[in-house]
Image 1 (tube, one colour):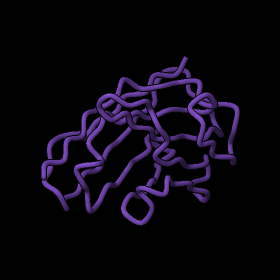
Image 2 (cartoon, rainbow, N blue to C red):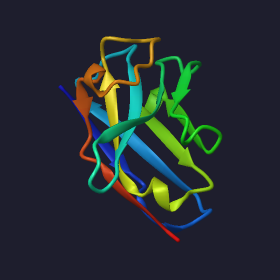
Image 3 (cartoon, rainbow, N blue to C red):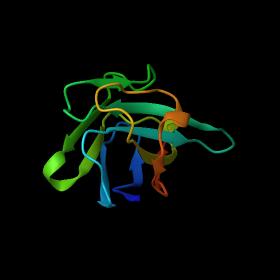
Length: 126
């Protein structure tokens, strides 16, 4: 079992920045990809971005490309989502997820991820 806990959410004004963190604990597996998803009010959960185990491969949704950056610290079993130039449309609950079947391929599909955190709320005021 892998437990994922997100942190760093909050309220920020348009144009501001936040950094989310996702810490993995329990029986973690080496060489797995990680992803970030978000669910806006009244909508389904959609892919934001992901990162391979090595950290060299990153994938982003078009809506956040150039504004969000994913990084990781394998020694701390933690991934980060740096969010800059935030917009009201970014308001959502943000989830991290682990794909233990893949080390290098970053999937955009939620079905590829076996473990999920409980989410952290990000609210961007206009």
